[in-house]
Amino acid sequence: MKKSITFLALTASLAGISFFGWGCSKQPTVQTQQPLVQQQVAATSTPSTATSTDEVVPVKPQPLAYLLMTKDAKITVTRGIEQMQGVPNMELYYADQLQVVSGEARLLYPDAGMSVLEQGTQVALGPNGEPKEGGVGIKILLKAGKIWTRLERLLGPDEALSVDASNVVATVRGTGFGVQYVGKEVDVTVADHQVEVMTQATLNTGKVATESVLLAAGSGLRLDPTTIDKMTDMKALMLKNIRSLSATERKQPGYIFGINKIDPIELKRPDNPFVWSVPVAWDENLNTGLSPEQMKRWLGSIMWMQEKQPELLQAEQLYMASSSTIIKFQPPLRSINLLEVTPTTTPRVKGPSA
Image 1 (tube, rainbow, N blue to C red):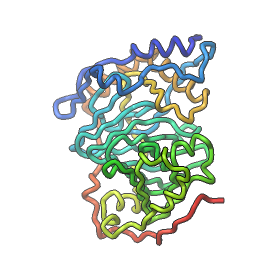
Image 2 (cartoon, rainbow, N blue to C red):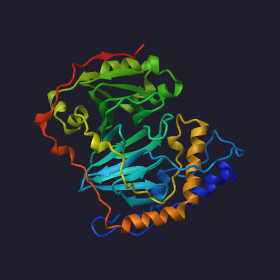
Image 3 (cartoon, one colour):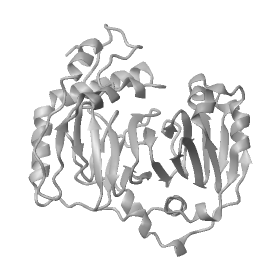
């Protein structure tokens, strides 16, 4: 079946279904967003790099992550113009947005690691790299709050994980690190291994080797995003602002999460993931760095979910109605025993690797 991207982009705006809940206290609620929310997400815009003659092939989407949560958590998940209360083990895709209203949310990257989103955190998810099936390839746009990530293995050359906060980008291959907003400033903190920090402009121009800095374990870097466009030597500013973490910072639950190994059992892919029947959305703001082939692939995912929507809705309803579904909630970070903290290495400050 041949469809143009232009036609698909127009029809994608019709995607989205509201469905019934899931018991009493565990019942996810679904509601159509108001126009204000719709304006915040460009759910159905045609990619500028595509032409009307490009053909899109329906393809089953690969989850960017799976949603885990604490028992008291309330997570709002937005997809296009649809919204629902988060469900444990939920598959998360391109352009999904999460808001942690209460408790904590976790993004699981099976067999690789996870990220912890504290209360008040808002993120949008996008693809990153060219991972094979089961690999890690995610770009997290941090809009508010704080996120900590720990990876238990080095990512392959085709895999990528980065956190972007107001065009300050932290990218890693295997590490424990946090990114948060402190007032209007962006703060990157490293608990284990290294994090490469750069601006989005540096990433776009491909000058990573000369204009990025490496933060080592025990280091932090705080930047005011409003100064980025005014600086002619951003690397010099970043090097100047690198600091050694204080004893207080090293005692924070997120930092402790970042330096302690995650039990491999906790990193297993969910046996019975929840698939929301609402098709994958489209967000032009998440397309920075994507190749035309990657964009076509995600447009194909929209098409696949539209075509499979009756089946997906039926499976969704069975999942909700099943009394045998076992939900495992995550322990909150605040329960971490501070006596289990392991020492980290002495901070090292240096520029990009050769």
